[in-house]
Structure formats: C-alpha cells, structure tokens
Amino acid sequence: DIQLTQSPSSLSASVGDRVTITCRASQSISNNLNWYKQQPGKAPKLLIYAASTLQRGVPSRFSGYGSRTDFSLTVSSLQPEDFATYYCQQSYSSPPTFGQGTKLEFK
Amino acid sequence: QVQLQESGPGLVRPSQTLSLTCTVSGASINSGSYYWSWIRQPAGKGLEWIGHIYTSGMTNYNPSLKRRVTISVDTSRNHFSLQLNSVTAADTAVYFCVRDSGWSGHTWFDPWGQGTLVTVSS
Image 1 (cartoon, rainbow over the protein chains, first blue to last red):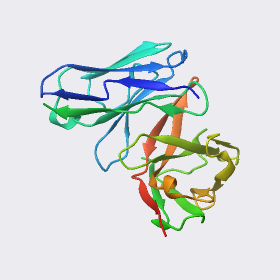
Image 2: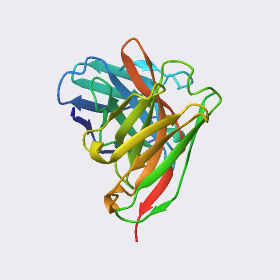
Image 3: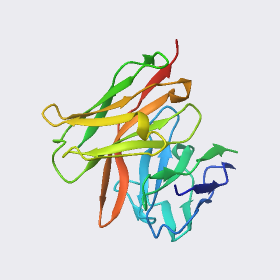
C-alpha cells in the first residue's frame, strides 16, 4: 500500500493567517492526490482533486500543489469555518489510502 | 444532486456480521460510470477504504479486510450494501458510503453519506 504522511499533525493558527499542510507519498503517485476537509461529526468534504483542481463551490483561498511524492494544501487567509481536520488521499493505486490527518486549531 | 444515506444496526455483537445499506437518491445508481465505495473511520482516527462495487457487480476490496468483506448492489432499489463478517471491537467505527467520481484517470470520493456509527460490543 502507498503510505501518505502529512505534516504537521496539528497546527495552531489565527483567522487571516496563511497556512500550508504537506503530504508526502511513499512512492511516486503522479498527481493522483486529493484533499478533504472534515469538521467534527461530519463526513469529509472534497476540496481539491488531481493535486491542484479546486472542486466546484470550494473557496478560492484554498489551493493545491505538487506532483510525484510531494504535495501541499494552502489556505491563503483562514476563515473561522476552515478550522477542521484535513486529509490527503491517493488514487494512484489500489487500495486508495489517506494521510493521518492534520488538525487545524485556533491559536 | 446525488445524495447518499447509510442505514443499519448501530450495535453488532462480536463474531457476528455487520450489515449496512447505502441508499442513493437524486440519480440512478446506474447512471454514469461510477464505482460506489465504503470507507470507515474509528473514533478519533483516520480514514480506511473498505472496498467498492461497480453497478455490473464487479468489486475490489482492501486486502486488509478482503477475507471478511462483501459489497453488493441492488440497482432496482438504487442501493448498495456492505457485509463485514466476524467483527471485533476493532471494527467499531463510523461507516461512510461514498461515490467514486473522476475522469481522465483520476478518481476521488464525492459525495459522501453522513456516516453511521457501528459499535461492536456484547
């Protein structure tokens, strides 16, 4: 299975901050990397697919970058609703796997 | 707009079979070239893909669970189902049903059901 390692595991920030979460794959996955946001008690929600394509309806303050083994998710200016847990997920090979998550908390 | 809704018992005894159904609304489960997945999440932990099914009945399972999992589809009822045999406390989790979406060699999970908590306990 392809392992995805996210860093940091948790992050404290304030409204208006710019934050970046990284995801490293254990082998090259081209750009088959997706990002999800999960709020407590809710299902994950797709933010970005194919490493850098914003899902319809997702605010433009979210952006994704990367290819092969190194990827990042950036939020340009944090809003209150952005404090959640974020997961990366690879779709390069089966089984699809997820990173362990990054919890974004209020500072 | 496609919506998914999980249903099934919230409590399962150890060694018994966990059975869940995902009802798809807003579109026919046959429309488009989609796979339909089950994903689970133990409390406070990450996400684990269990397996998926195509409307033809073709399945693919996570090797870590393959011995115990069966996913089936009933196109007449517009739903697909999960069976997990010989459960233990380690199978306690929120179970999500999800559509595998994508194009041009890329796939992603969207939309998701709201999830249903299944507890394995005597």
